[in-house]
Image (cartoon, rainbow, N blue to C red; front, top):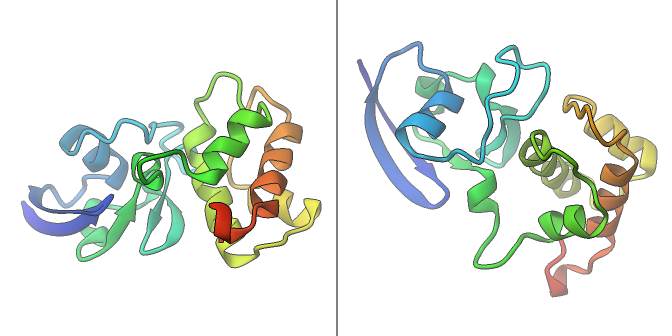
Amino acid sequence: MVQVSVTVDGQRRTDEVEPRLLLVHYLRERLGKVGTPVGCDTSNCGACTVHLDGKSVKSCSVLAVQADGSEITTIEGLADGEWHPMQTAFKECHALQCGYCTPGMIMAAVDLLNNNPDPSEDEIRAGLEGNLCRCTGYHNIVKAVQSAASQPASVGGVQ
């Protein structure tokens, strides 16, 4: 067993974990962060995307021990008392159907806008290409990211 200390959604945690434990399983099974789904277990789908030290990562491709000392934000921690603007945009633009990919899509989209506050449609599509959706056809997902990007930061925009 190895001791890890992480800050998850603003709360500091120290736990003993097996060195082979994936971050997604640590988040879900130890911390109860079930908003981060286990998708493909091969890092192909992106459903398990979280922010690790401010950058989006597929938590099924990161060991919990690799996150030691890091700050992690899950879909549950993205909102601060009310929905994050990206979550609102996904709802308003009907950018989800079954919802399985939605947490990962939202986390990747927030990271995209943090790095590029005014992306073109092609840049949005390229920025989300590591996240798969089998239901929506992506059109409304792109619309949601464009909608969130158009929000001024002073009224809850993503920037």
